[in-house]
Length: 323
View 1 (cartoon, helix red, strand yellow):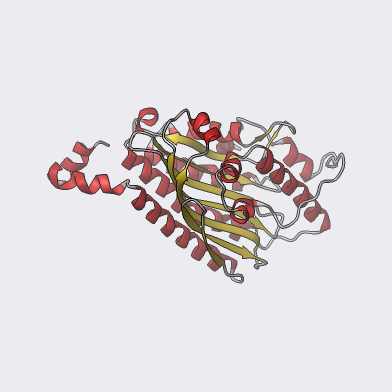
View 2 (cartoon, helix red, strand yellow; view 1 turned 90 degrees about the vertical axis):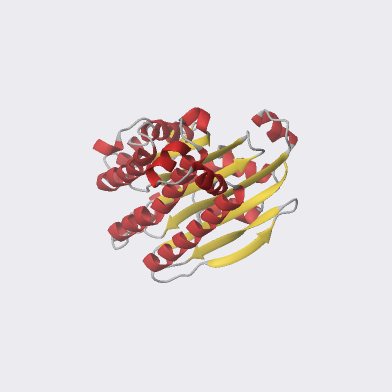
């Protein structure tokens, strides 16, 4: 929807409305919205867990900006989780300038990054990131996504998760879900294992009006909508699975699945690399790691087991909506 359409629908003059709209996508407004999303998600997770509380650490980045790291541990449901906000700025390293093919070196980046590792193996690991990057008025974009890494793939949960993400995407553009779902399948792929990290979700990067046919205002709205969808989606999965019983064999499989998560984050994840290359805060960057993971030599699930079934379904381009 362009400015003129908004103006007509609201019955306001363009001269009155346009300055307001332009302010909505300033970096300050975006950072403020992301801070609010961090607050709302932390409140929802504490309530759903019913035990542990988030610990907050405020930090400053050498070179400009800072953030709020919030960690929750040893809860009734969440074994370890992080909900981080950052808004940083400064000089862009030369290698990233070359990668982005830009000449400006003063950047601004803000976002919310979340990883939750549950105690119960029947509950999935979840990751979300929404972010905004800016060099100047002409070079700025949105990125992010949500993906799910179940220890055990549960058909109803997979269908629910992808269905909710499709609703969020469809509200912005009918092309978003198929586009971003494939992007997630390709991105969250552990090449050396020839398997996906989990059941994917949606992933996108460098969204601009040029490649989406949406305004910056609409892209901002989509980013916020996706961020606000996290709490209701994940707390629903928490309540569905938190009471299921498990034994040592389930916990062993959980530790194996966690090791795959670690491998992806350390070898392939671009957010981890960007944080390390821009002198980011190490504790915040590596908060995504599980509290414990095991590498069992030449581990193979038993034939016909639930573990083997999950392993066999870690494939790209699976339609989880009809699973």
